[in-house]
Image (cartoon, rainbow, N blue to C red; front, side):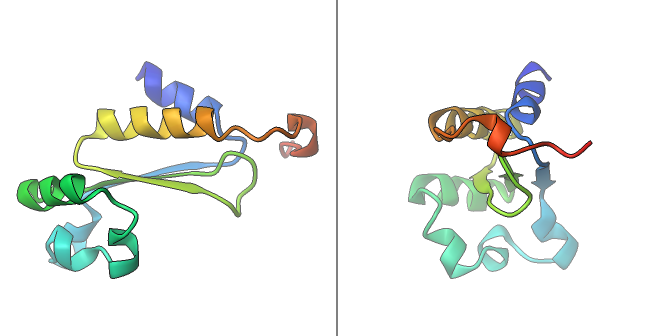
Length: 103
């Protein structure tokens, strides 16, 4: 829960977590993820998602409700960890005051 709170704190907009959304369409992970999305997932990771029939997708909007980062994994804890690492690494060089949070 601590990492999840950290993830949320790194985003001035929202964080969305989807778990096994492919099952709501009666599809396998392989059928559900588009070819374009597959190119963004490491092949070994994608193979393990398919093998386990488990998919976690996190969309994190660090600065605005428009631009976001996507993380895929088969393990929720590892997905959150990767998202936190990504957001810390790609933190904008622009001061946060230029991205005001809504009141």
